[in-house]
Image 1 (cartoon, rainbow, N blue to C red):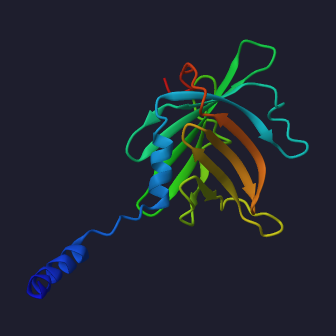
Image 2: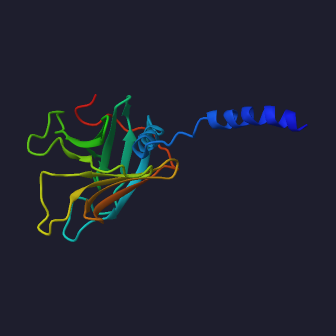
Length: 196
């Protein structure tokens, strides 16, 4: 019996040692997969935070995020804004996420109603500078500096089948934020301006 144990034990040890260690996934890869999970789906949302004096939104209009154009390294999410007391929509904005080998990038594609680029205010954005987490990433904006030296940028949160959040940050604080309910898929809106 001792002889059998002596023969079998080394093989057991070799077998255990050869088992692959579970792969540790890059948080940005998981975050990207979480975004892509909702491709071709649209969701309603609303304003949840804005700074005093900001009049871009009233907080009562319907907002729509449409995960519309997805490929391996680019995701475009048009941001549709209901114009209150009318039957019209502002379809000028599209959030563009780009996956690079060592970072993620966000850009803002702003268009005029005729589809041309808004020359004064388009394609601004930033890159991630840390691994972030599976559920959120921060994109730092280096085109503008805060007087107090705090970093400025955007924070994106994604909890599949629960919530998608887009917002601007100053340091660790939200300065502007909109949330979308991923439990309530709605009909896809028309194409954003310039993306027919």
